[in-house]
Image (cartoon, rainbow, N blue to C red; front, side, top):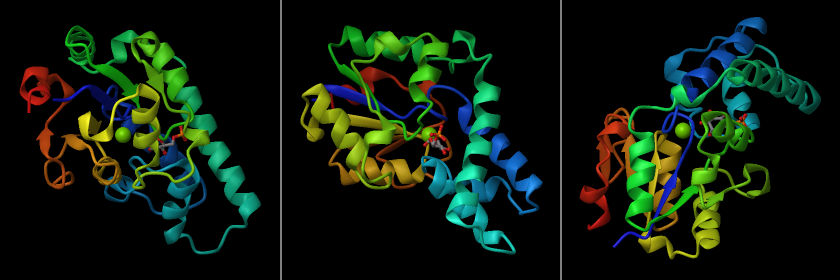
Length: 214
Ligand code: G6P
Ligand code: MG
């Protein structure tokens, strides 16, 4: 039976997948590079510089490492500005209940987000204290789709991966969860998340009783 739930953040607990998209879109427009929501699907769960490299695939010129750093920093400043006014009312419906049910069932609760803004965001959402462990994205060697971040969280929680369930909205995240030897719940589009063990339209549809016993 499951002993831990390990959550992604952006697009799972709150709508920041959209906020990241808007920040990248602003940057892409400024440098005259085409970017749309289909390309954005490839960015979900992917770290900041790797995301920029995907956007720059369509650029007409190449960008030096220094320029790339400037662009990534600029995008982050748009994103940080956008999340300033985040509050508990920005939590997706159902998150509060799922966290309460998990606690009630005696499950450990971890966060495996590639975002370096994750702790700040959880704090603004008012749920930072409800996690037993929050991975430090900057300290993880291989980004999703590698399993590293999920394995780091499982180890910190003291739960073997086979007893962990990962919850993700990104294809790269589902791959990472499976590579870590965990069961994967996909949140969002069933076609984009076809590899997941279960796909739910949103976190409000997550009933702990259905997943924990299996
Ligand atoms: C998450 C999001 C990505 C984002 C990444 C890095 O994985 O899904 O869209 O690029 O975190 O976020 P950061 O806040 O560190 O730029
Ligand atoms: Mg996500």
